[in-house]
Amino acid sequence: MSYARLVNEPCTLTSRTESGPVDRYGNPTVVETTTSTVCYAEQKSASENTVDNTQVEVWEVDFLPDEEVDGLTEVTIPGRALVLEIVGPPHHVRNPRTQVVEQINATGTRVT
Image 1: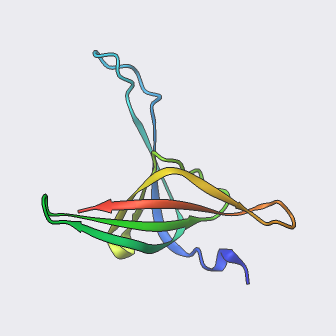
Image 2: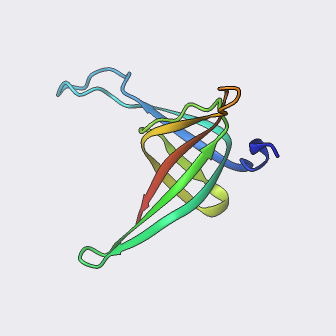
Image 3: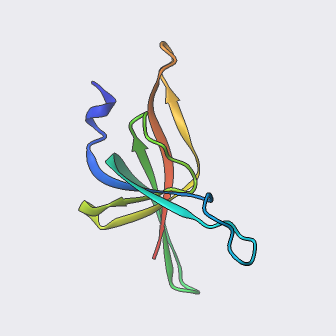
């Protein structure tokens, strides 16, 4: 079975780059680019902090191999009203036989 059959949920990737002009304080300006694509998301864990009343969810988000995803990417899945921030660099999964990248796995978090 092809992995591409599982990665079928419409989503939007918002990529951020620090390529804009420098502001008056010397900080780079963030430029956002939005792309529509498909992904697969599965919740891995959830926790609650009762001191400041926050909930943190950790999700595994999978993409097709040609997507550009990094630690500055935000994933919006409108079908679930879900917005996730990608944490750290994604993992490019290679087929051990062919050495071709077949999917990209990333960790996303949602804090409410």
